[in-house]
Image 1 (cartoon, one colour):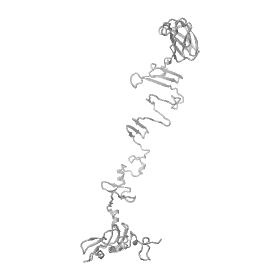
Image 2 (cartoon, one colour):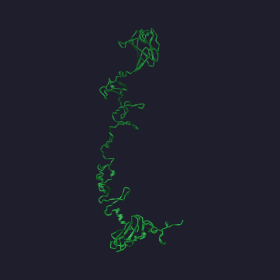
Image 3 (cartoon, helix red, strand yellow):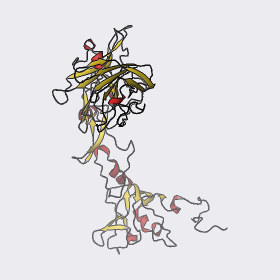
Image 4 (cartoon, helix red, strand yellow):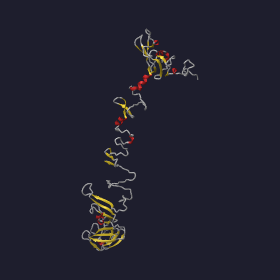
Length: 465
């Protein structure tokens, strides 16, 4: 494919480079003698066939050897092409930057004065030094940056700096009251940050400047902070952590929980243990042998709310190697010295039996027709069975007076036929032991023969297994 004019910039000189800075849009152009050169069409930006529009804002730079202002010749026509350098002005030279705008024959220059003696300076050209000074601020010159809300100012680490000859460390920042960048010396910066004047050691080595010791060894006061109404206080010297006003709705401890205090108070209504054994009096010291009593205390309050006045106890007497029981009346403290095992162990289990109303004249009762309404069993395989002799005239003839010779079936629920039976007549009045014979019917029933009995007599039948 053939190259066109847009591919190759023509400049009419085969010895020149294919493209030079005078033949492209923007760039550093060949120097000119003075501003009168700008009056020619070479620098025209009208984008015509004869003028390609080679200026580019803030990219086209040209060195002007004699940059003095121009003037019209006396009595001239006022055409720009007739302007000459004003030799009465101070000599000047330098690099000029095209700052943008439409350049043509009519508006290349800014004209001052009246015809025919007007003077002119190029409109869209600015001395490069002037542009640099406006953003660098040399020699104490204030720097002014004009930006609107859509502009972004990006500063590198070396973009803004300040040096205080008397200090090696400087902190730069924005002074709101002065509306400018400023700096603080190292001393002033430490003072502003409440770090005091200590600067001979790296600040990371201190808890704070006033303590002058490492953070992990400095003596610290108690630290207290709050979460709601709960205060958490930590004393760094003792390591104690104090929680006040804390309420936990649920607490799970992964691992062992060790409590070294003298008492743990639990206010739960029911405490459930999944352990199969509950160990008491486990050694927590270096003592090789010890005989310390242990057991359970059962409190009872008598004087007021939340006051435990008396204790019953189930205690293991380690020195005697015995279990001992105390009631509330035996000892208010549950001490084993006051234990009364006989009085305390009045355990009782009451069994209700089935009584059958007997017909008048019954002399032999069935084994399942128990004469006693209940059997009260206590510790030691003893069952007390009470009966009342009845007659045919009674509404419930459970123990007919006519059956005394052949025996009354007494249900004791001791689950053994190896028993001993004692009968006591009138236990509610003047008790009288009476002779009786008995025959086990099964493991839980015995037939007791009391001889001749009379209506309304009462007997306690004591069965010992």
